[in-house]
View 1 (cartoon, rainbow, N blue to C red):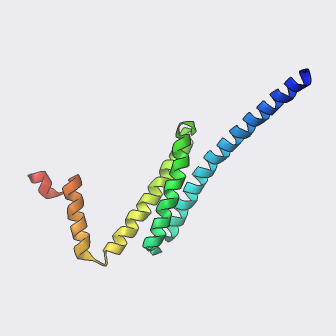
View 2 (view 1 turned 90 degrees about the vertical axis):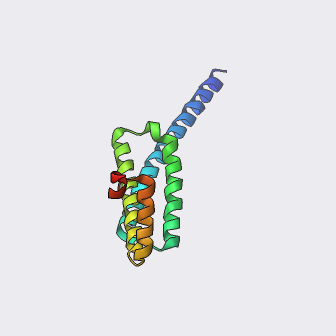
View 3 (view 1 turned 30 degrees about the vertical axis):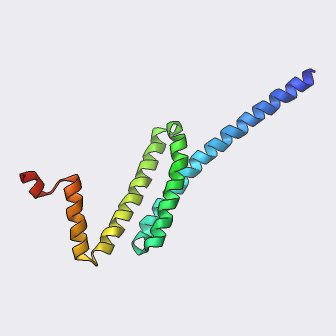
Length: 128
């Protein structure tokens, strides 16, 4: 009977260690994937077309699902890494969009006007 209890305890401990190890691996892998995506987008984002940006967006969403699941478990240093990578991706996407819009000045102006009408910040809105 004692052997069964020992084996059962050993199995439970082994299972707990395996679960913790998987969780830690998943957390670390999510940050690494986000940083790799940020690096890739930063290097090649200006050459991406619509379908490539769709793929980036899908990857970004999938990675964020894992990060959100473990967000409370990350250290401040890991939070900083996450925020830096997210910022890099967003900046690269914004820069790529602006570069594409430079080919269509009327559309760029229309979007710029819309942006300022929604979020404010133009000189006209400040005077009114």
